[in-house]
Image (cartoon, rainbow, N blue to C red):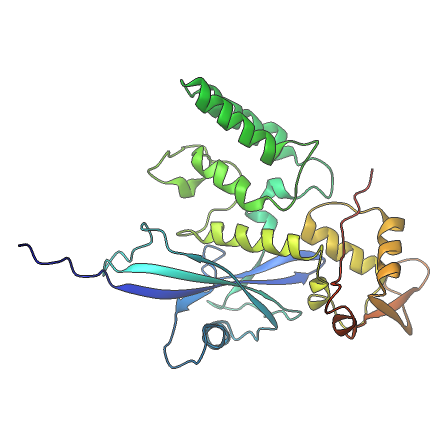
Length: 309
């Protein structure tokens, strides 16, 4: 009888989607001029994966981590090391921080996450890349299917993920994966390569997919947990807070409705100070009421998006 096949060796890799708000824009910490997320092997001497993540991120990037949560585990068979052939299991994390590293030499750098997903930024209205490039190419991909059932399925997925009238900002990953399947992003590689990919910076391996997962998680989370304050300075104006939420969600908010929501939920309190940096009348400064997390441990907190008309 043939001897049983030896189990394939598995390597555990950690990836970090580390987000900060810099100059009122959502930035992600990257390596190799924006081509990679911080990543590295899990070291077995750490008691937990999260402590291991903190250790190598701080060592690799000289950047302390604040809020951290696990995102997803990627274990596709295609994730194998080229040299050893070992299957790679990648455990990704989302981290939020208020601090910024000054990039120098080969140190990591911050990149605006809309550099990778330009169709996700609706703050100024419908992104031009969506109407001019994304939608026409998706329609050609739909029409290229010879099977009517396949065409219907493709059209339905396009309508769910990309319809302007019902745009859902949380579907970042689903949109990227549809573009990947259509061969419209460079990462599709040999599956369905394109010589004319859509705008949007590519990343090595599946790091843009991991980034899309992190953006989607954060966009969903700001609607039911006040994590946006993990990215804010200790004192801020309500205008700065609104710009922060808009930057993360990629959507404009109605000013009066937004402020009404903040007031109703009791998330902030006045500091007694004012800011003269707004360019007009001095604006009141506020701080996050951190005790609200204890007060609402059962009921939960909510920061729903209030779209402008």
